[in-house]
Image (tube, rainbow, N blue to C red):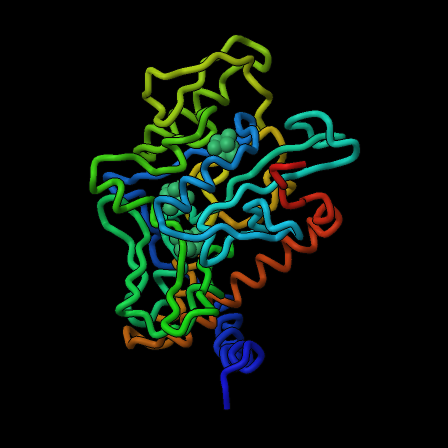
Length: 335
Ligand code: SF4
Ligand code: SF4
Ligand code: SF4
């Protein structure tokens, strides 16, 4: 009998139930991972993004993926979300009259979606064959198709809905952003940061990107401010009145922190980013696994635990944000 989504989820329900019980019984969780010593990442500042989608095109070039035509005339590359051919996408928030940039009311804003290179990644934890790995130095989360058995545990376990499967291919792979690893090996920076005309996407060491985010939080709205392009320490800067930022940097603490950092003038849940706990799901599920199996390898139980935690967080988020979902639309560059 073929494995359907229903039977797959059913098969992990028992593990999820064990997880629910064990969560209540667990007194301590395993230590959370910290930022790798040479962690690399991206800083996306929604207030600087003009929705040009140059990053989407550059990402395609860098990864050899194909445009997606979702309009009837088939003239425009209009990806609706991440998929196996689209490793980064620009989405738009719009409310009311939709005329004021970075305003929740009667405004609009853009959000860049791609792998956040989690510090303690669920996709790595649930993979039973080490097809997903996290580099101990740079923290880049990589995928090895030669190891992959196509179970798609990583797809279900990622709290951000990032890895996508090539359903239409005979020898299918998972696809996700790997922070332009081949470009980095050539001494280049991430393609999306390289081409961004406004510096909305910056590439670099996470500590430098976090310091830059902190600098921006300290700016007074309206004051004269300078914003670099490509990297946070670049001399290629442009001037612009400082925007009003929401007080948090997304990615600083979510599920143990991520190597992609996000800044915005509109609350992140309005931009489609899930509201997540600070503690990494993996630190909880791996503790439960060790508690139940005392060191034996039990990926199904681990996966069930992670799925339970992700679905619980997602359900709670869906409940909180159901009323705004209708406002988060795919940005069409020709609108
Ligand atoms: S290239 Fe920069 S400004 Fe253009 S859509 Fe991408 S992040 Fe936004
Ligand atoms: S965002 Fe998802 S795919 Fe990327 S590292 Fe985190 S868990 Fe893995
Ligand atoms: S880092 Fe590279 S693979 Fe990742 S979104 Fe940017 S261009 Fe795409």
